[in-house]
Image (tube, rainbow, N blue to C red):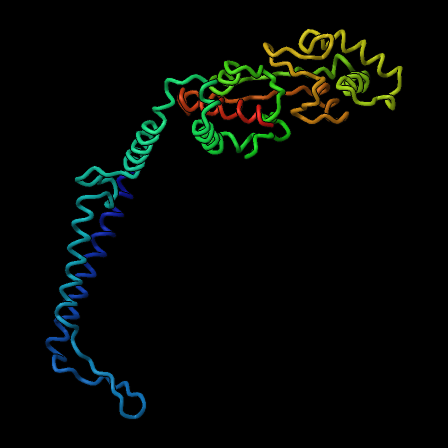
Length: 299
């Protein structure tokens, strides 16, 4: 805050309080000298009901003075006068940090019983799975959904299709370290054959694709073997080490329609799972992984 605004606030605040103090004092003195006995002010209702000008009760007057004294004490102890921090050094950031720290200490004490358990043991523990579900709801549901079934661009975590592998270690790594998946755009390489390639990929999962035509499917297979096998394999089963998804399991992150597949081929895709290790800590990462593995087993 600049010096101008600092002094503007100081002068305006103290001036307003002193103005209130003077107004109360003046009103009290006026009543004592002019209308101590209570005089009519000329306002009459119902012919005989007159308004009288009586001084305020003494206890009420002292209550006003007490509030003014309180305001000065408050401004001395807490920030309120421009850049003056107050004698107590209180800040809203500091209070928030203290509350967060207290909450984290309570949370860590609650989760300490899970610290020495591995993912498999946690997945078999009903209380641990419930704790993992709560952590998931607060940190992961915004992308993957409250039921973990994902959305376009966000993988379904409730099925058995794992782009980076579904072993406990692989799931923990995905949560803790994050993932970056890149499908390069092949529009320039495929050209008009993008239609044929996407048609061939469409039928890889066993779906009927006769309507695309035998010649188109044959051309698509030829292009697939040239451009796609390095990542997705000849049989389309993918490669978890590369994050190349299985094209035969019916799980499509960006949609499994022919149009969506063609868009992926032409334009490419880039999916980013941000790392949550620093945000959650090791124990909570393991709990989320245990919840997802247990969810995967029950679906």
